[in-house]
Image 1 (tube, rainbow, N blue to C red):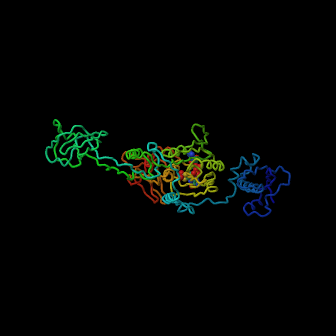
Image 2: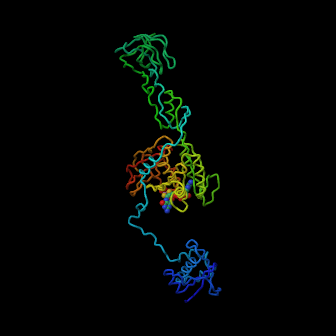
Image 3: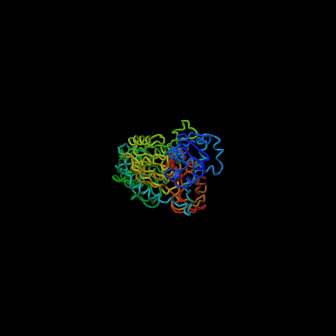
Length: 525
Ligand SMILES: Nc1nc2c(c(=O)[nH]1)N[C@H]1C(S)=C(S)[C@@H](COP(=O)(O)OP(=O)(O)OC[C@H]3O[C@@H](n4cnc5c(N)ncnc54)[C@H](O)[C@@H]3O)O[C@H]1N2
Ligand code: MOO
């Protein structure tokens, strides 16, 4: 063996760089590998101390690490670059990159293929519509019910049909201020009807009967007195002493409203599942519905995960840390959608802590939205945890942005693991979260509002996935899109007033091409 140098690691393994090692380094490892053996000789002037722990990531056993060191040193020596390395001992920590770079390659980098822009093979890419269909089928209303007075029920979802207690209007009445009479007593040409004493006003009904051929002063909303079926508008009349004059003919029933013409007593006023808006409070009140059976608001827990996240901008953040953007956004969605937001705070990427927080949350929330850690990387603890301990259905959705979406049950509570990138978190929350939460709240599945507008941009999109772009309408009514599609560009979320939805198929969008615009307002934002 033509030993040129001996390298000894601090744990006693010896590597020699020479022609033998060259053969070994290029070949397979025989049982007694030449070039590496347990150090039994005292260090000589030929000995260089090496720190083989720099290869801890590559090998656990000291002898294996020494072997890697031998291979690296041999490769370096072949290039004649050994001496500068040896000049600074111990040989190791300061040279980790150079020595790693010198290791012979074992793996080939993946080659670009003709279909390199296709979806990865062997991955179950779920089209958006399929994913939505599965979600819809899997979920059910979970919010309990309680009876509330109508005045307290704004924003609540009806848990039972609301039925009209009486008709609207309850009685036939006048639609205008004018004069009322029996139509049968009038005809064509000038009409002159003597007035009875008294009048009919809203809230002050006329108790008597108006004689055939006579008229009565009547105001808007007044119940039609007996003997009155038609009203002439005040502006079309003149009063001649104690008579009213006008030109006939007047249509029978003119300017009157029939009892129950709006809603009849006993009719369905609002169906179960309807979310009460201010106009609905008007209707229910008008129909005498003073109390309604409602679903309790869905409790939506929101949890952020990630070692880099600082829960609030009230707290300082180091340069490697970022303030939580997703949690305030998702809590805001929940509130805006009429649910009870439950702030579950932020946890670091520690599976035990995440599990503990989810377990607590399962007591206080009906559904949990997490963000971060949804994909399959080293730090993607949410999806791993849900896979190991929950019943995860990890979906890779043919969607951009927002492809990783982890769905699981945690102690009976559905967990939506949204992607960490804020733009992806928003898209997943609006496209998947909103209809799903609506269904769970008792309000049924909802479709986003969308309308077709001309594109104010151009883009060529490949087939196989749906894309959502941050967009807003310009003065011409065309949809312009945000300058960047980067999923971390949070400013684009505020710049936009909605999303443009590009279909799953390929599309070549030019200025003027019709595209679907989904306004934020249609998502209840
Ligand atoms: N090798 C791959 N890498 C990534 C893939 C992939 O398919 N293969 N998918 C990318 C896509 S698309 C997305 S989206 C993200 C999803 O990642 P995770 O859900 O696992 O989220 P993180 O890795 O934890 O974070 C991603 C990104 O978002 C930032 N973040 C996280 N939480 C918040 C928050 N509450 N507020 C503001 N910003 C947040 C985080 O710092 C990261 O920058 O994965 C891609 N990678
Ligand atoms: O879901 Mo990722 O972009 O698609 O950010």
